[in-house]
Image 1 (cartoon, rainbow, N blue to C red):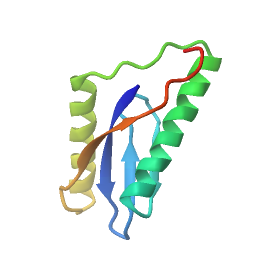
Image 2 (image 1 turned 120 degrees about the horizontal axis):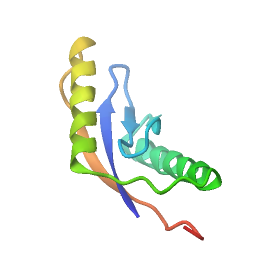
Image 3 (image 1 turned 45 degrees about the vertical axis):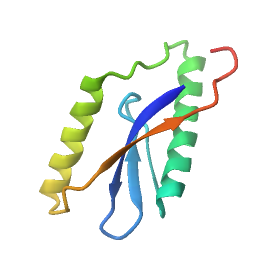
Image 4 (image 1 turned 120 degrees about the vertical axis):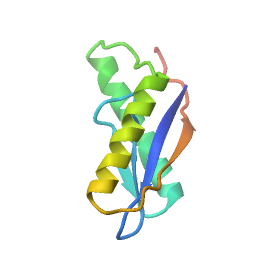
Length: 98
């Protein structure tokens, strides 16, 4: 299972990261590697909760990704931060029983 995530460098250092396909699934890290590890963990926890609540697995679409990228860039512009973000695809080990 793979998800696209959006990484944004923070003014004070490190990165914030969001998984657009899973509303509210965000994390951060002091380095790129830490941010990616942390968002993988956050995604797994969100999926676990969705499973407990019998909710379907999220579906990632280009429209969801594009909308989140636009929102990230707008937020950065409002905060006077450089309009620099990047996307990565993170892979997860399949959840048992899902």
